[in-house]
Amino acid sequence: MKLITTIALAVFGAALQPALAQNKDWMVRIAKIEIDSAYLEPYKAAIREHTRAAVASEPGVLALYAMHDKVHPTHVTVFEVYASKQAYEAHLKTAHFQKYKTGTLKMVKSLQLIDVDPIAFGAKPEILDKKRD
Image 1: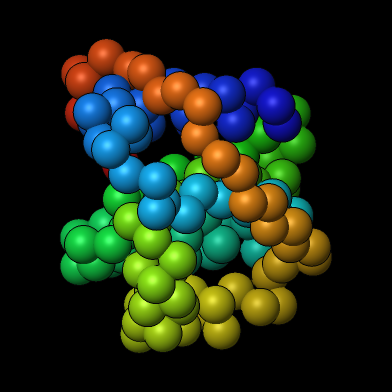
Image 2 (image 1 turned 30 degrees about the vertical axis):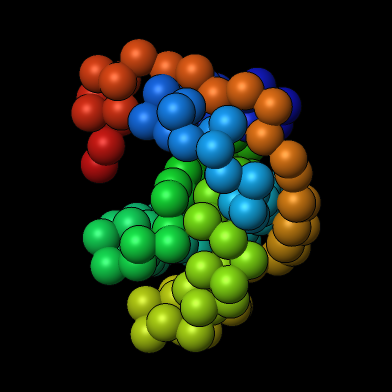
């Protein structure tokens, strides 16, 4: 799981590196989620839809990266970056988040939210284009 988190941070980094030094208000979080195997594909579809909607419509959502462990595909890690705690709180009230949250309740076996502070981000810009859905 640490490798997945490291990769997410690396892929994310280049787009936000200039802002990292300028903005101490960001809220950065890692969500570790275990999905019931019977619901893995519907869960993946739900989180794709939610991620696209949040990034497209919310200026305060700077990045959302969802990935699953190759060995244990029911173990999902989501790397989240918000412009501020207020942006995060606004995100929780959006229709697309509420749809995701209520629609996946029975799919999620466990959820761990870990707030983190960024140290360094770095990635080649072209990587971001290649990794998009």
